Each structure stands twice: as C-alpha cells, then as structure tokens.
Length: 485
Image (tube, rainbow, N blue to C red; front, top):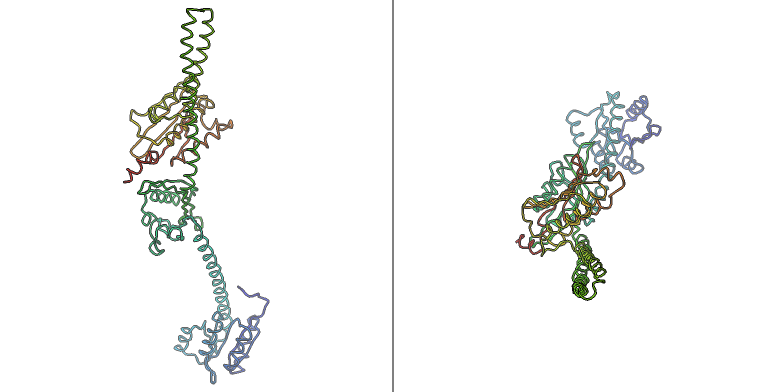
C-alpha cells in the first residue's frame, strides 16, 4: 500500500561519520523527500531502532567499527524482510557491490555520487510498495482459492474446470471419489480419458461446443447404461470461462439424479397403472355388462316382433342407445390404456389415434412408419410416445386450424424418432394467441423422461414436432440387461 504523500517516511541511517550522515539527510531533503530520521552507529542501536518501529527504508555504510553493512542487512532480512536496504558507501568496490546485491540489498550509492540517492530511494520505495501490494493481493487470492476449494470439495455434485483443449485443470473431491483416482492422475487429462463412459464422451463433446460458441448449457439430462443394464441419470451444466472476453475454458458440473428420475417415473407409472386399471374395469366390467344387456335386448326385439310389434320401435331405439354406450365405453377404455403391447403395441395405438382424429375433427390424418416393424418397447415408454403424439395432433386440430396431420414413427439402430407435422397456422401464431403453452411443457417433460429431446420446428408452413430418444432406454428392462451383457 502506498504511503500518504503528506506523511513523513521513517528511515534508519547506519553511519558512523556524522558529517556523511548530515550530507545524506540534506541531499534527500533538498530533493523533497520528507524523512523522520533515526541515526544509529552500532549494532545495538540498529537492533533497537528496528524493534522500536519498522522503518520504511534503511541506509547503511558498508564498513563500520566493530560492525558492517552486510551483518546489518542480515539482521533486517530476519526482522523485516520487506524493508528496502540501500548501501551508501565511499569504499564499495565492484566485487563488494555484486556481493551486496546477491545478499539481498536493494541498491547501492557511492558517497561521491549522492545526487543519485533521491532517485534510488524513490525507486526502492516504489518497488517495496509494489511488493507489499502484490503480496497482499496474492494473500487475498490464496484465501479465495482456499475458500473456493473448500466449497467445491464440500458439494455432492461433481465440479471440474477445463482449458480450451478440454483438459482438466480443476477437479473436486466428488469427481475423485467417483473415479477412485488421485488428483495427479486426473489433472491435464480429458474427462473421457479418466471416465470412459459413452454418456461422458457425449457430455465432453457438448463441452467443446460450449468453448467454441461461448454459450452456457444448463441442466441437460443424459442417461447412462451400467454394465448390469441399470439406468443412471445424469444432469450437467457447462459455463464458459472468460479471460478479458475470450473463452479460456469452461466450468462443468455433473449431478446424478437417478433417484429423482425413478421417483418421477414411479409417480407417472402409478398414474398409468391406475388408468389401465380403470380402462380394464370399463372394458371387462361395464363393457361386458352392456354387451350382455345388448344381447338380451336382441332377443327381446325378436320376441316383440312376433307378439307385440307396436313396441318394437321403442326397443330398437333403446338398442341403438345401448350400442352407442358400448362404443363410448370402449373408446374411454382405449383412451385410459391406449397402448396394448399384446394387440399391436404403439403402432396400432397410433393408427387408432389417426382414425379417431379424422372422425372427430373431420380432417385428413395419416400414420406412416416407413414399412419397418417397430422394436418391442417398454409399456410406459410407449405410453409417453403415444401421449406426445396425441397432444401434438390435438393442438394442431384445435388451435392451428390444420387440414392435414401426419404422424411418422421411425427407428434406426440406436434411436427412435417420432414426428407430428401439420399444415396449420404455425407454432408462433398459436403461441401469440396464448395457447397451447401447457401442452408444450408436458411434451417436453415426457421427452425428458424418455431421455430424449423434442424440437418444435416451423418449416415454412405449419408446425413439425420431432422427438428423438435413445432406443435402448425405451426397451423392456430384460432387453436392457441382455443387451448390456
């Protein structure tokens, strides 16, 4: 910290010749250096001067009776190493000057060139001030480093930083514990080198994109399949590090959310199971009873046609009403449990959805799958896919004023893609009318539950909603295990 210009500087002058001491003091005073002097001639007085109050600078002769400047320098370095020390001597040769500077002296001035002294003093004081400020700043940085290190090591999330090449520069305890490695085995390595997992390779590639574009990525979810076939869900965040505006790396965090996802899945599955139970009760209970009643009415119709034809028209109306009730019951049952894996699965359910959408909204609705048989899907995942298609087609028919809708379902070796395209007014126009906001959020949520992504596109006319999800996360659990083995 720089000393107030109005305050006097405290100097210790070690000089056995009073005349030389006076010349030194006059030279500095003549050049505007305000000094509070402590003139000493012996080692004892020198030590007392240092103990009384730390000086701002020490000026010392090189040779004194029974004492010398080098010993004074060693004493000062022990008690106040930051205080500059300048030799002022008339007998300092080149070899001694070099020895003095190697020993830690700040500078030296010959007594026959005292005109140099003010400039040397000012430079020494400025350098000492810079050193103190730098040491203070370094101390503060070290305190902040210790605080941040303690903080990130106490977090349960995995925290790390990389340079622009993707090499790890900072890692926290959670990452080391996960990898069961020491810090030196991780630093300067890529994350995928120390954590060889397909999901981590994907996360690392997204980190490279963050460094390239400078855009942060928050709370992205990815699923990882363990060797035993179990699914581990991770959410990650990437924030670019900047040095004067230039991206110099990134800070990443990875958090396991498997328990949370399993809880969400279980809550949804409870709802799906209850809907399937209600659908089964409607179909096998009320539906069967209504069907039985319909058969009885058929027999009654035959009997009335022979014995009391005047009542036949009323019974016929009742039969028609009962037939519609049976149809409504079947529609309700199918809506509560839309995907039946034993009766065509998702493809058959989407065909029924297309037919119902065509009848209900009087528009052209079609389903395509490229003529390829769909792999077996887990019932919960198939239901999510159906509900997304149902929500998208309903929005298109009700709000987008579409005249045609196409539902397309495709699979590759690793991914499933579901798209719903319409020729309506477009998503932006629909949102401008304040709808259908909640439906979009629900579709996004269902896509995340599948470990996939959903995009809402406007290809010029209408809207195209595209969901893409890893196929291995949609298969039945037993298939996941056999695939991993």
